[in-house]
Structures are given as C-alpha cells and as structure tokens.
Length: 110
Image (cartoon, rainbow, N blue to C red; front, side, top):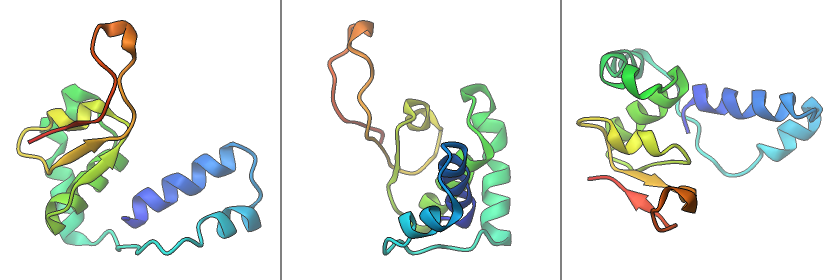
C-alpha cells in the first residue's frame, strides 16, 4: 500500500470518530507501506489526463501508479478504475447494484 493511500485510510477512520491509538492499532496489520517517491509521483501525475473524465482522485491515481509500477493488480470498490486506458489489472471487490440490470459479482479489467 502506498503511503498516500495509508493516509487516506487514517483520515477515513478519524472521520468516523476513531481515536488515534485505535487507528494505529487497526493499521498494525502486516501491510507493506511503499513510499510515494518521485517516480510514483510522476506516474500518478501523468495519469491525471486519462482519469480526469472518470472522476478519479489523487489517491486513486497513487494506487494505480503503484500497481502499474510493481506489475500488481489494483484492488478497489470503484468500478471506474477498470476503465483507465493502459492502466494496471484492476479487481473490483464490490459488485455493482443489481438495479442496473447487471449481474452482481467480481469484475476485472484487462
């Protein structure tokens, strides 16, 4: 997990009212944190043009950049990630609503 996305998780937990000590404990899972370095920042920045119309955030682009740089699958609940041209493999872990006429289930790109 990129340090940018780690910070987003901290913010979401804090927004939910979780105190800092509980946040630190919740994040003590064995997840490897990867520094958001210059190479990742350029990659994420270059994704801006192709993801703007999809509504992806800076954090979304940071995650996609890390997955692409490491040749890994990006895991998300955001279906729009699968539509990024030239992006990494994406696994959607939350099925789309059934009301749209599509069957529920996992969707991957590429």
